Amino acid sequence: MTQLQAAKHFGVTQPRVSDLMRGKINLFALDALVIMATAAGLHIEMRVLEAA
Image 1 (cartoon, rainbow, N blue to C red):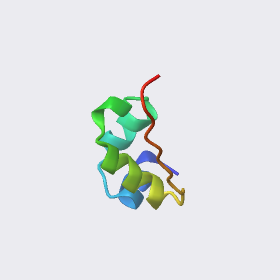
Image 2 (image 1 turned 135 degrees about the horizontal axis):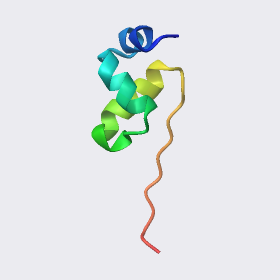
Image 3 (image 1 turned 90 degrees about the vertical axis):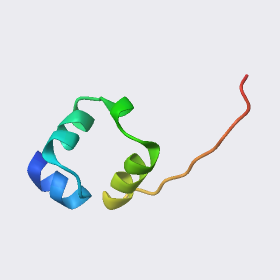
């Protein structure tokens, strides 16, 4: 799948897919990452723990 195809699937632009592929995860809001992961067919689980 090309970045352009992935962008269309995830509902984002190709440069956003490029950012994600380069590991620039800090440029994304948590909800955007969850939406894209769900679009990729992944199941999301989140846990919040007290700091050690």
